[in-house]
Image (cartoon, rainbow, N blue to C red; front, side, top):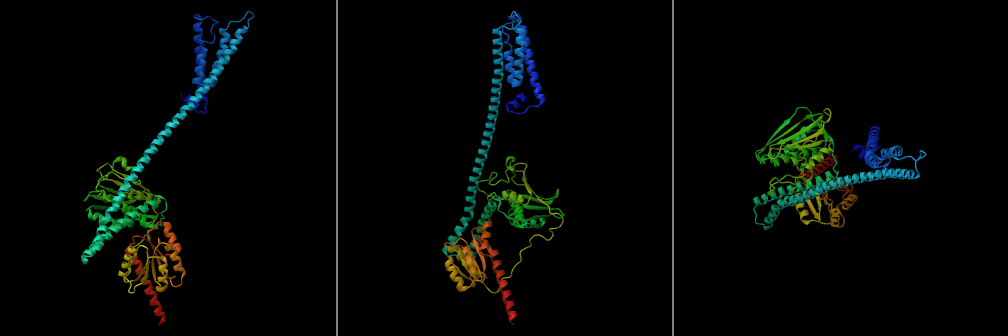
Length: 531
């Protein structure tokens, strides 16, 4: 039947299949001829000459095809003429027999063509039906995936709302207490620490969301340099150690002595390892054990992390790195976070030319995560990797700082912070007012919000750069826009630095200290020249 299906689909048949089909046609003809001879005792010798040949022709055309059917029809016509039509007195055929022979010959040949067309149409209909069934199955599978993705999205939004409300609650309570005014210095300091911790938590959530958006859209730029993977692991462990200490978890490190250099982005690779460790810490019970191994395998740097935590169900292992995919969680959300860390891990690893894999023996049996990164040949990266940031001593002389933000509370709080560092501050809430202040005060540093009403921060920066009194000022963008294109736009407008809200105060402090130190050094140089 395979040859018939190929014929139905218009496939080209090889010689062996054609031989089988014509052989089958000959067998059918011989069988019909034998039956006709067997019926001579029942039927007149020259009666019903085509009685048994019609079924043979139709069956041959249906099973073997058009030309085998034509062959059987031709042989049947010859057999009927030779054996089953009585000759006339002169040895020929009577006119009536000639007409009958021609008529039935035409009928046989037309039957072959009709049956061939019918089987071809049947084959096409069957093929179309199979395609429709396949398309329907694909559609149902796609609909199932879309429904699952929609469900994940709803679950993610619910988690996001929960995670945002958690830090907002203590911040709101702290604001109420500060507004009451009846607090001693110790309580004010405690309240300030609470606000700082919760703001850092909120900042981490937003950074994770932005990272996922940038990575999934391919907007992340990697600053590739030779890196020691051992240093990457050390920095990630340093970041996660406080969490491990709070949960009293044991972290075992197994680092092979061979050099393990990769070409990658220091910040992003530390993020990969830190996310894996953070995930393991959250889903491993307090007092649990986590093991992190770094070594070489098949010319690649292999990072393997195992824990004795809650593990994963077999059907979830394949989804572990997918965005918005999460295992079953308790209603108290005690683990915290948005559950997008592993999606970032896989995306960042793949951007580095590597791969990531998850595994688990089942619920309650812990989890395994492995990352492979291309190894950098030799010790070319021995000098690579960013060292610890230098500690700048506070400057003796303060700076003249202009702060511009249409959010009055944000501007006032930032001004208070900068003043506490010993700098002189002016605050404006519009670009026009800021231009007037800048012309009068000649600030050395301008902290400018980008999203100002009317004239935005980028345009204000261009105008400050164009004026001789502020052309040499250090311009720092303070903005809620943190995409790569936003940074590029601010640099093109004349900004020297780009800070994303909420501002990293430690980084801003270091920056102002460096500017103050540089100015103090330049002034000292001028004084030396004057002497």
